[in-house]
Length: 311
Image (cartoon, rainbow, N blue to C red; front, side):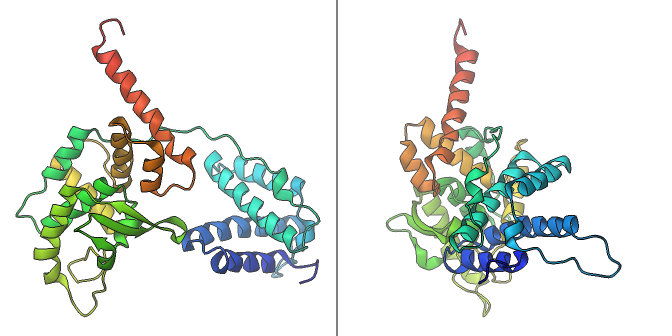
């Protein structure tokens, strides 16, 4: 490729690199495409005078510079983009500029000069152990799909799964005898997660009594099925969790990831090692897991203030 590679052509090549050589998820590729194509469109409009019915002139990669990137980031910030979204934009620029530099389309790795903004970190919401128990035990036995829905909730809390991991869970990856499930997480990375005894009981009941009745010619080996025999979507799992929380009378905003947060927080508060929790959650960086130490500290402070006579 020449040094005058056009920006939009480079974006397509970079996305192909992310898909084939890095094996990153479709969602990550889509997010990166939106970030980079937004910049390309802004740059074309900025450098091309308005022409009636004429497409903008293509922009070569060699025109990318730190001042231009900074101007674009300021434009997006002034348009109301949040600090967290600005951070995602900068990450996309950093890896894109590194890729361009490695292939000779930029004289320097501009990504090294971009700094990430400090993001105010909010402590994740959690349910306490009594609320989790109330949620798990409040599913009426005679309600349609009761065994499936109970198994979904038990597995989300027992293993700290992401909702996408639960939706993609497959029969051949579940070992009830050894209480282990193999899941595929972010970046198509697989890991083994333990399955608690209560979740094993719920899964045995669902697999033995409800799932066989849903199997059809359209059915694959996904663990959780809809009434028509197809895999449950993540949206449908959200609806199931929210419906169960409503039936249980919980006032909290309950959603699948809340059970993942609760899983990690309850493990930590009961003495689990942070590195083990990181492995079970599938976090690439221990810093992501460390936020749960702050959640636990908040709980300890709350208990101290409530019960200590001189708090």
